[in-house]
Image 1 (cartoon, helix red, strand yellow):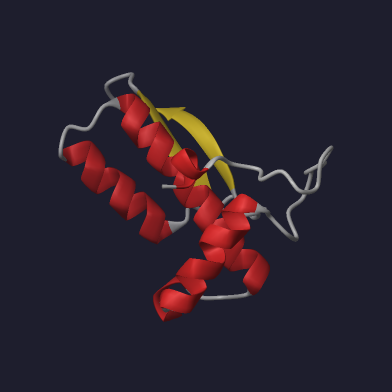
Image 2 (cartoon, rainbow, N blue to C red):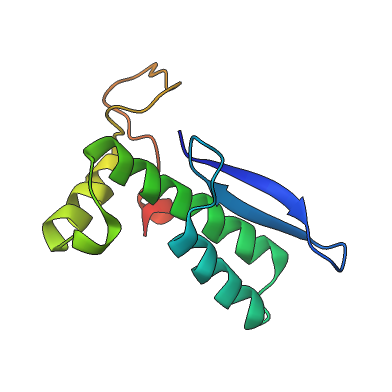
Length: 107
């Protein structure tokens, strides 16, 4: 299971890392978050990207896909999955017809 962990950097600032089920950092995600950090993005922006990329990596893990072999159809399936996650752990639906996330959040 992919997760996000809060850490402190050498300056004492909060940063978030995305780790796999064996607690190894997800390197492509971390490279991108580090890039955003170097651009001077806010801590909240870095946190948001970490959590959103965690969702994407979770989807890829459920589908047994590699991040560098996706196409437009898989991205469309990811958007659909965001609306109604299938194969997710710890999700309970009260109303199965209602989307998990709003269109504004997905966009």
